Length: 313
Image 1: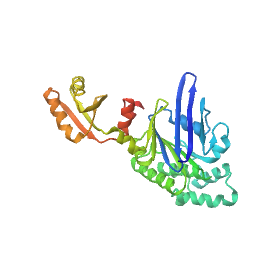
Image 2: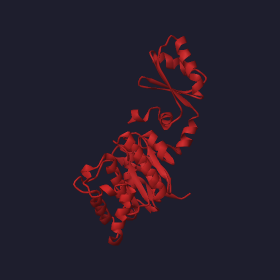
Image 3: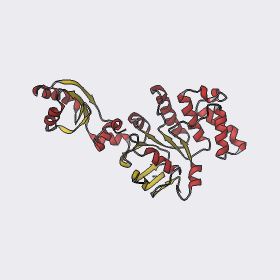
Image 4: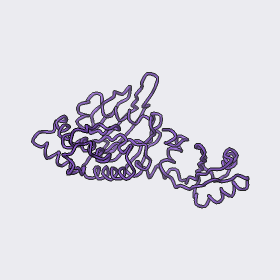
């Protein structure tokens, strides 16, 4: 398999704080690869090193075959970036943004106009191209930023929390756009996110990062298959007693408490919900609510860290 991004024991320290701690990544060419983790886990720091914005403290990284420290110019020519925070000028039009970045990235003048038209069609902004960005919706602004990152035909597009702050409907449309982009434009996408559904739906492979370390990496399907367990989320009036008794049951694979919720990992949860409720009743424990979920990436994160990604964030 051909890898377009590779890192070996890459570390970034700030005095006594280690933001990224010995990360090893192998990102296949033409894939959508997700780095999934809570806020503060080291996702943006990792991307910043891969984009040559930050220098690693130790270890190495290569993008499109170029070392990020030894060959920063070639790396930058190979990549496009969409940052987490918006970087658009409201008093410029969409076309003017693309013209400016085409010039900055050295797109030849004789192909610049046709390339801008191609990008405007790709991001579905042709009809709004000559309107000021301040009139754009949040989704349109994000599409413009993605288009801007593609203006010079990069091999890799870095997306840092691409749908942060967008409403669910707009988020769905951005997901569809990223999927189409990966399939039709021959570009590898590396994205960071803390949205489980986003990583599950978009990514061919996901690396879960927590406290600066990659704790596991695989396809979303394989990560969920590892669990072989459903999650029963239950709220009771005597949580300490309930946990003490339930964790001794032979069918309970794991049990966690997140605030007022108790999460019980079991196989064949459909059959066990009534049994657990009856068990609580026999102990004179009142069940306030119970919910069954089949494995998802939230459960994978919970398994490896003992907490939810939202709680960690």
